[in-house]
Image 1: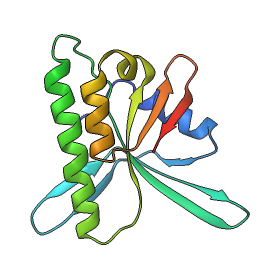
Image 2: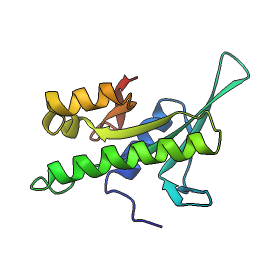
Image 3: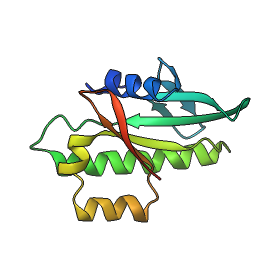
Length: 137
């Protein structure tokens, strides 16, 4: 299993503050061709008893000198993970969780276009406050 990003706990706390129940252990999903490890699985009740579930991959972009490479890896990983989830016939939405600082500095107009064109879902998190400041669907 891969190492968790340094901002993983703040993202978990932000989801919990947003009333999500977060599974603290990354979720391992296997297909005959590959195994993936999704950082977060979370659920919450809406409108009484209906349960909503999501999965999220956390990316913090720790090396500001390698943001282009990390952007390629994050977007590629997200797309492959989403394809694996589709192969196993799950309809659980996948998100790419990012700190607000990363979204405002690394995700320029080209990266945001890639997000839109590839329908990548993003919760944007203020790490200091441990709060989700925006959900980009």
